[in-house]
Amino acid sequence: MSISLALPIPDAALEARLRARMEEVEKDLLGHVQSEAAFVTTAARHLMEAGGKRFRPLLVLLCAETGNADAEGVITAACVVELTHLASLYHDDVMDEAALRRGAESANARWDNHVAILTGDFLFSKSSELTAELGADAVRIQARTFSRLVEGQILETLGPEPGDDPLEHYLRVVAGKTGSLIATSALYGARFSGAPRDVEEALTQYGEKVGVAFQLSDDILDIASESEESGKTPGTDLREGVPTLPVLFAQRSTDPADARLLALLAGDLTEDALHAEALGLLRAHPAMAAARDYVLARATEAKELLTVLPEGPVRDALDAFADIVAQRTA
Ligand code: FPP
Ligand code: MG
Image (cartoon, rainbow, N blue to C red; front, side, top):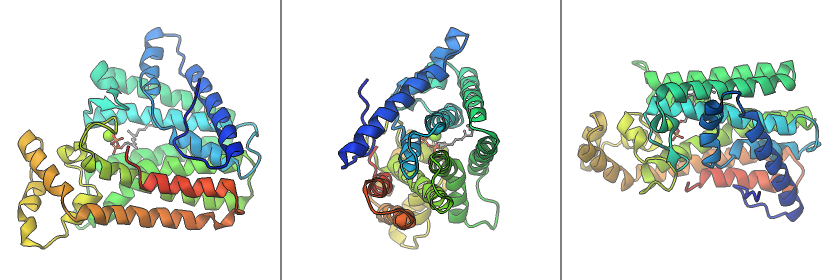
């Protein structure tokens, strides 16, 4: 198996080590989704085999480079975060009624909502079982991460309460549904490699910020990508009526030239023609550049936390990781 890392690593030795460790993760993941019921294995493998960037396990491995990267538990922790993420995607696609994921049919489209939900549950149970191998602290961290994922997702579904600031609400959602698991990935890498406590704390905060930047980029891509290059159907958030950063920025406009866009954004965009019109106007709006700048600022904040680390290839790679996430195109 030849793994390509979702991150260019200029240091050849670090690259080779991460590749080899990611291959172990891939192999273990396949084993972890085995069920006694053949159909469950098929359904659980479906999205795993469809691809994915494996950002979360890669971050575990990279953060583990700040301590003893070969320590027991590092690979297990990398599998835990990918399985948790995978579980959440099965559920998320049901909630979004999404047809595509990772360039493949979503599980709900391929089978149905029941299969997708139960497969997500199966994957989450596998990730919990593995977490137990990492000890009681990890179980507590996993439970807390799960609560934050669910809270973020529910807050998104409910929308802001009257009187809430919509941007603040959105950022809370993003921190919960994505910042939480990426922060946990960084924390696990530091913790299970035995990195010093100040490094662990800085990397956890770094992960939270990178996670937020990752989701904000994802939301920008949902509007900006013209095709299904992201492996998902563009414009889903708009169709679902979920206002994301570019929409929230555009909605602050008092420019009369934006009247049509604002009227569209205030209405129902499930109809194809209205959806396409709103998407076109939004893509051309300065709110897109403002949103990209906002993400870059979050990535810069994340990188500032890395000063706790000595200069060298690991810090450079974590620095590049924040940049890649903020500037992603897929
Ligand atoms: C993707 O958001 C969704 C998440 C990052 C989190 C989803 C969390 C749950 C469904 C809670 C249940 C969790 C588990 C572990 C069973 P998105 O729809 O904005 O992104 P997308 O563009 O990738 O669909
Ligand atoms: Mg979704």
